[in-house]
Length: 628
Image (cartoon, rainbow, N blue to C red; front, side, top):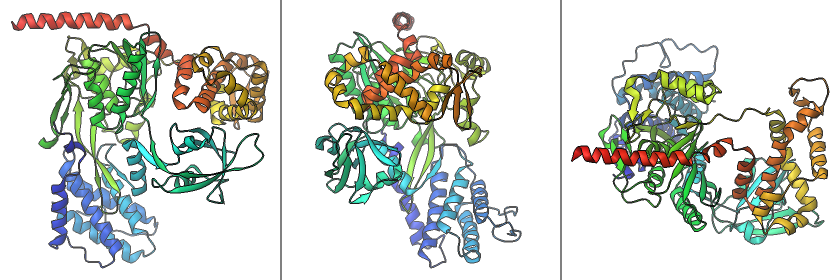
């Protein structure tokens, strides 16, 4: 299979579009260049949708919805549209793209002439968004600036100075300098406050302001002034921007002597490369079985999901197939070689935030009885998008096909009730994950019941149901923990702690993270400091409440409630100090030590993985005997 057809803009369509304009067809009769670009953009969008959308699409419906978007954009309560080009109740008799474009041009010019103060670029964007809303929830319009940010994220790198930061009390505070980046090489430390950028005060900057000023082309420089704790004098740095990697693997480490753990946060251009590097490192540490964590992974590049899936299977194993009304988007993907993990026991962790590419990998593992899937029912996004650039650098993302797991399961959940119901469907799932899965299974018709390679029953029509369902831990009230996070007390506490004790802390722990992980705990003085900071943020210790309550952004709870729940806060702060001293990768082992019930339950299931492997081998042998 050639993956280019999923991601490369179809040149033929661009040539056709250019020919239409050069020959004068669909001619724009206005001279204003902005109007020409807007109308050209509208035509581009409709052509891309009609020529590539995976399902049946009506040009008449596309036009009517785009016209409705224009009318709503006028926002004039006195507007009378009857008998005008804006009349949404008229029979427009749209038969083809030419009819649609001509009618839209009339409506567009009517607004441009009668409402000269209207921003027609924004009006066109509103119309395009309205038009796309009749498709699936993942076919969307993306503004130019947003497109650039998204592309950086999925390219796996951006260009800048290489820091993770947070805005604390209107001041840019460095969480950590990205290892190997320009700031790290110059010695910028966690806890440093950036007070000036290019001789201009940086106090009061928003996150967007910071990125605009600190990101830039490789090789360019930016001057920053830093205030460092316990240093009375500001420090000036001239930082040369460089390529900064955006890692997609949050962490990898050994859970015990022979169990490796890899957490993937999304599938971007570098994910497979990062994954192989993590696997190699874990093998060097003695890994004999792998726990791979896809929880809250929203997906990303299909090519990367396929590349990672390949690592778990022998050559020529079916991994995924795609289905569309356009035959050029129909295909079946098989592994091209023996994977480096084809014989290693594996458990995949998933939850309701696991979508798209995450479901491809976990679905292939489940369908081939290659390992077990543990957690909660996944999101259910089984649609493949292709992105098309428009005349002004903005983009539309159009669903070109839907994917099926090796057994033929359609993972995409229904979206017929509209985008809002689709997006918030997971909120309506029962809080009991087991009951949710049982209810789902009971409602699945026979047409959506499938068999794995070894004959186990699995289900299509709405995400991956795990082989073993683990209920989310809801035994403890989240009030105290959530109040801390909402008020960023954990970050402030760790920042102040390192300001005061950073040198002593690093002297004792920095060279031995595992010792810190096993032995560090907060002193009574630290705990008292944390309690004081929580009270300063609006927490009240009272005697007259049965359960913790929030009133006017103030948390009220009893001393016994506080003592019962505060372990979660202390654990989170320990993870935060690990992030600020060692980097983000070290945040997750501490979090998993304190809060990961699903991981703990999954670690008890390696015997089930072994039994599944033996069962699959017996079934395969029986099938071979039957064929002979």
